[in-house]
Every structure is written in C-alpha cells, then in structure tokens.
Image (cartoon, rainbow, N blue to C red; front, side):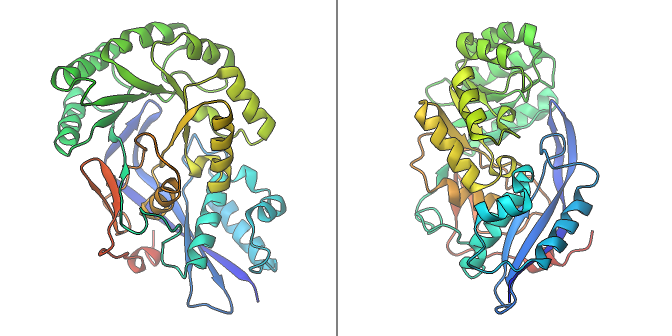
Length: 365
C-alpha cells in the first residue's frame, strides 16, 4: 500500500480587476492536491498548487498537462509513510523546479498527518489564541478606487498599509501618498510600497527620493530582478529601505542565495512559500537572512484559503517582529469557506468556525 495523489482544478474569481504593474487579473487558476494512504482512504490531506503566470518558474501553457502527468508518475511509485520526506521527493521528482507543487505536497502531507484537520502546526494562532498582525493591501486602480480602499482599511483598524505602485502616472501616486499622510502620520500608520519591478533603472533612485518624503517603511522590488549591479547600488543609496521579492524566485542553489544577499545587502526579503518552494525552502531563506542581519516577512501569493491557512500557521511558528502580508483571503467571490478572519489589522483562526470543502472539491470548471 502507498500514498496516492489526485488533483482538482479550480478557477478563483476576483471581486475586482487585481492590477499590478504586470497587468490585471480577473481569475486565478489553482489546483488542489489530495493525498490519501490507500490503507486509510477516509483520511485526506489537501494542499494548494497555485503558480502565478509570469512569476512561477514552472508555469506555462502546458502546466496543467504536466501536473497531471506528474501525478500519474507519482502514483506509479511506492511512496509510503517512511519515504514521504520532502528532500527525498525533491531529488526523486526534481521538485526544485516546481515550487508551487512542492508547497502543495508539504501542505497536503502535513494535513494528512493531522487527520485532514487543516491544523498543520500547533501554535497559538492555530489554537485560536492569538492573531497575526498583517498589512492592509491596496491594489492599483484609478485614484478614486485606491482612495476608497485606503479609507476602508483605515476604518478597519489597520496600522500598516501596502500599496501597489507603478501602474499609474507617478505624480498621481505621489498625490495619493500625500493625501494619506495628511490624515495619518507615520506615528499611526506605516506605509509599505510594492513596485513589482516597475521603475526604470536609470530613474529609480530619483523616484525613491521623491517617495521618501512620505516616510515610507520600505519598497519591494523597485526594478526588475536580475539587475544585480543596479539593485546593489539602490540598496546602498536609496533613502527608502529596499525589500527583495521577485529577486528570490528561481534561485535554488544555496551558495547562490547566500552570495546574492551578500552582494545586494537588502534591508528585507519577502518570503512567499508558493513561489520559493514551500516551508523548508522558506526556512532556509530565513536562516540565510538571519546570518546577514537581514529582516523578513512572509506573504501569501494569491492562494485561496487552503494555501493561506497553511502559510499563516507556518508564519505563526516564528516570533514575528512586524506585520505580515497575509491579507489576501477576501479577494475572491468563490474562495473556500474557512475559519480565517480579519479583525483590527490581525488575521485570526476562529475556533468556532468550520471549513466547507466539499462543494469546492467536486466543482467542475
């Protein structure tokens, strides 16, 4: 008898056009990976494989076909409980090039070990005793749309906002930041920016200097990745602390990871388990950052509540020093119903709430 896998596709529908500097999304295609031991078919572990087009190294037009082929190949092997170890599977199936699948496998296996309860880690968050402080996410759009989001997040009690920038006229974005600061000083509101690589290298430092007048906490990925000479210069000279995000994706060699952090010297790194290859890969990045006194926070990457729950419980394993990027559970019309909820700028796992998985699992798309 052995562990068997199956996969189910689901299309998540955004409540609005989710815009970044890379374009707009109306839907997000995800795949739920189910694991069962043939000896105990009543126990099911579920993980989420949710690669992002244009970011995830494994994603292209053939992804669904290749994923189904992988599942078929996996089921031909005799993978029992003793062999289900991520390093073994990583080597056997070359998973370092399938980060979202590796994350789904880790999640599904942890869930199976916990009898399919979705309680993957035993900590104060999963026990519904404490919440995780998170930033309020402000999506790109016209000025009115962004202002509506900002007003809503402030009323909801967020003390840290993250704004996607780089999609509007730069002067308009400066005007939005000015309006925020007129109603919320740095003492009561921290502002993070995410450019998703939108700035041209030759203009980036000037733009960072203009943005710095609004007491910005940090900016993620001001220029596109793999421009290390320019990024190292910006990390040294920017008046706003720089966080690496897309820069980390696809860098799987440990020596290369260590050398990149040493050369660029960012203030922060942003950790997305779906894009980095799961929990173990994220732990390794955290250790490398700690060795170089680089701070970090963990962010979801538009997963449904299956993936968000796993990332949140993993995040709560750490002694958190700042707000995390885990506020994406309310983006979709057809998300999985879960115990995750947001109150006053914190994410909670409600002890009295329940999961509703059956309608989702059997949905046809």
